[in-house]
Image (cartoon, rainbow, N blue to C red; front, side, top):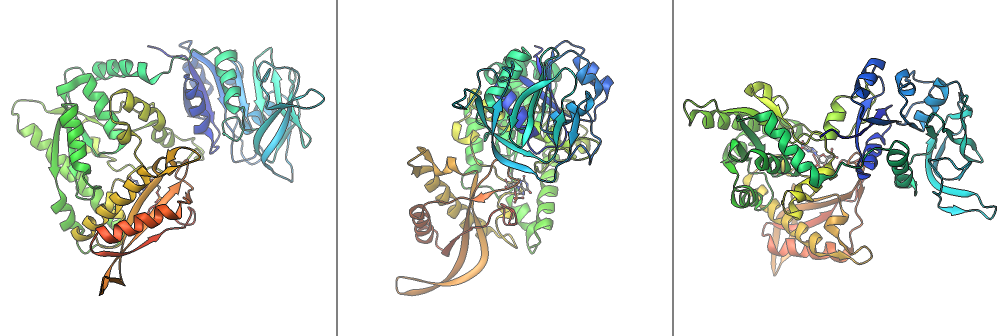
Length: 538
Ligand code: XMP
């Protein structure tokens, strides 16, 4: 099935992915591409007749600092165009208006007056002034501004300091806004973007995860045919959803290899097996490689070296297992495909603008290079989806809500949460402390939101510190290990605030850990934000 689509050209704003997510939330399919694609590329992209509109993103740069322009074809295809911030400025400049720099940067909350009843803003307002002007509460971040409209445009919005905060050429359906409708601080942002994609562009809202399953299943079957697929299951959300989806499509042709490196969370390995082998009846090979990993990690305390060892061993074990599977069935060709849970942000990131300033959301490709080494074709059924869509899909495929909405867990697992040298004893203590922390976060409800503290935090875990401190238990002196608790709130994991957990919760977690985990006699709470700290301790 061919979906209508919106093209988002990325000029390097940190919010570009948010634009795409807002469009997808309106159930319209969209793609992000770098701003420096060619005119021919744009025309070819539109050739199937499904391109319904184009959005030009913001940028962290000024139109004076960089020469990024939208390809001219954007303005000649006859589809509606929405320019946001820098996107509006380049639209103004390219179509014959004027942009000027300003010494002061306007940053943060602003109230914008809507003018002239444009199709984009008509009937959308946060409040009305006594004079009857519709007003929008928005979020702005810009230095330059449009100072002269291009021919054919009229003013659509203004603030006292930015007289052209929005412009429109309704005949050509070109719109520009200086503020950012994609961020949630712009109260009507979602309504404005929906108005653009659904009404002005007339795109079909047919991007629905429940329906996507059938389409994805058909695609996987068409791609794979009767060949076999191998997938590295890690217990994380992406590989789990990929496995469930591929299993739905091709059943027995899929073999999952679950490498247990011994650095997983409490009972995690058993849970993965129970879900995939037990409930879904998928073919899963569990490889207990914990002894190997611990042996190779012995004596190593440098964080980067630890990561490298874990990554290398993971690939080695996975490769050996793939060979074994093949050897076990002489005459069979074995797996021809390697499936991976690559998601759309990884795709956008690796295809950034040539000028190298596109969105950078940190991601870790733990099994990079594996398909080439194994000589396998790559199957990536989630590569069009954002994380929240992957989760929706997971639930629609019948995976448990708790599994699908779990906090992210790093590939090297507890290997980067045990500071310094990794030892089995440390991993066992840490696993139990961590499980207590997570259990209490899940069961403590914050009364105003009605949500659990687990859902109110983006990532929470315990860290093992190889430090001994003195304590007292009963009448005896103890000399035991320390754990730190870490809980953060973040939307993109690039920056994060430490979570202000209630004291009562911290108190309960601390007392349970010290009482229940013999070997730990001190618990601390990490109150560092990122930056300058990172989320993980290593
Ligand atoms: P930092 O510590 O850099 O973490 O603030 C940001 C996010 O990335 C995760 N992380 C990793 N994930 N392999 C992974 O798969 C890694 O080596 C790794 N290091 C950090 C971290 O858990 C957080 O979500």
